Image 1 (spheres, helix red, strand yellow):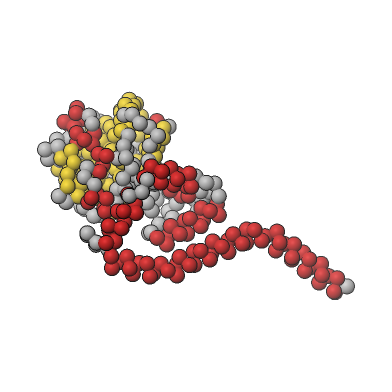
Image 2 (tube, one colour):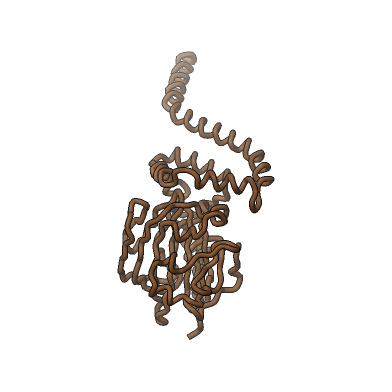
Length: 335
């Protein structure tokens, strides 16, 4: 009897193992790949640190690898891959992504994702980004690194030190350009590992959106140093906001990039992407409360915030500084 019982137990165990084998093998394979990457990662980082720096070989390689490829094809391929609904594939991709970046998902609303795209466009837990309620504060629309900021002089904005572009080329709307002469600008870069949704910087109404088709150059520092007028070359959406009570007009320019080429605006229920070939003018009337979600990028990218004369940069907002959505970005005059 004991022998028969043992046989039954072994048979049941074998059946269970057999049933679990495909998933177990897949998990084991993912674990092995991740372990191999982790084992070599320190070596890679040691070499990368030696190569890193302005004008370095590492920076040149970064530029070549991220730009001297068929950018539109790479973007479409990434779009296809990121939308594959497979929790196991998403888990493996995110594990590798964590190794290669500072990805932090502790404030994400959900812990597991069905696809890589779901992770890119993740929502946050309630209260993860407190919004400054000061009526003089125009808040940051996104998590970002401040790339450049300052006063708009002679209609020019700084891309990087020694390289400039014009409001005319960026906006392609002469009447809007005139509003910002002598005003302020801040360029906010969303890195790939950051939270990708952007929000209203003030109680406002979106009155107009212009979609401008373009290229998909990477917007990382290596590219900004090498591609003149990069923001004016890339696909972008010019979003015009009228602030509540004062009537001041603040404009957000959402710039797409390689692996992005997709800007979703919630209030228009519209995805703007590289499949569009013509400039589109989209009048609208969308009231938004400060901190309310406006839309998202399919991957990391850039937002350029423009404000009229009289608005100043908030304390602590300097080039190279990190800022989170909801924190003061600019200050408008007290009424």
